[in-house]
Image 1 (cartoon, rainbow, N blue to C red):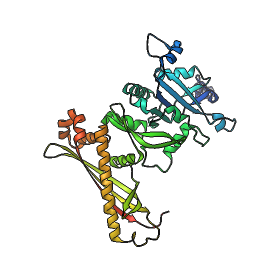
Image 2 (cartoon, rainbow, N blue to C red):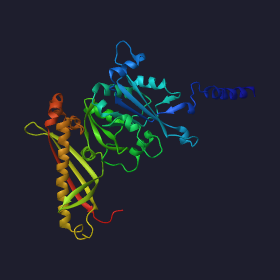
Image 3 (cartoon, helix red, strand yellow):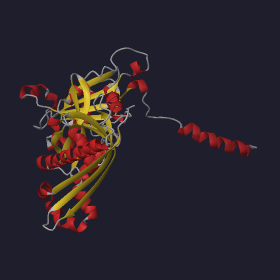
Image 4 (tube, helix red, strand yellow):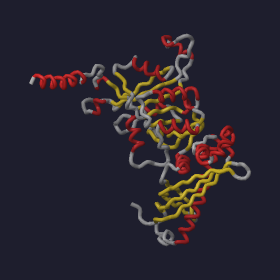
Length: 390
């Protein structure tokens, strides 16, 4: 009986000892940051001289404007009133200095494990040194999810985070819902931080979703093009759609086509993309895209029942759409190839995997060779559905 009591005590004792939490922080003492923004700081010398406490060994005082947003938990729990989120901005020298500066100004403990969104301004992203510092800090931080969304903006990141969503909710959570909703438009890059980092490592080029402030509201459309660890250009929303088709990262898209002075809208579904790279007899690298799609008439003209059901007319539509879209995709590829010189389509990676002998010959000079490779796009669309839309 005595031994039985000893065994029971030994079983209970670890539960009592190991259940304690020596470093707990109550939830009402925490702020769960959902969004972080970075802008390039361009204060005047007089403004910098005001903050003498941060002057140290002649180093520059501030280089970033760091903005954070976190939800007002009392509003979420229906136990308080006020704005749905709190937003703080501070100037800082580095990523770490930004954390220290906010800690000096707020009475709460910050937690970044729930960050959903990071936004960097175009001005900062074009500064290679500043972007590489931020990118390195994000990569090293074990609390930041690699699935969070990393945006570029032609505006100020601070302005985006301070925008009124008209939804009475925290801006970071709002942007995350905007990206994760069921309907995902191909007119924006649906790419997270982990994918961007991977593409920069593999191909030294990547796409990042673009976020803008339009008529006072937040809009995610288009993409920024990154190369050599900085931003080199922007794509509009229709250009982004075309880029995603060439990359094989969207299964549907809509196009407006003019046929016989009529503007009709064709929804492309079941998009399939095959990319082939090869070296021709003249030693020039070629890339060939074979893309197929099924078409669906989303909009035609009222009281024209004969045309959509006429085989000859549909053949004309197929031919016209295929020619126009093929040319449009080719032009988009050449723009990125010539203007940005960024291999976002991973042509070099494709050569390395499937044409290793050719890659060995060109890899050392790929930066000079890539802008001069030949491209051919063959887009083949067939209209399958012409009836009523649901």
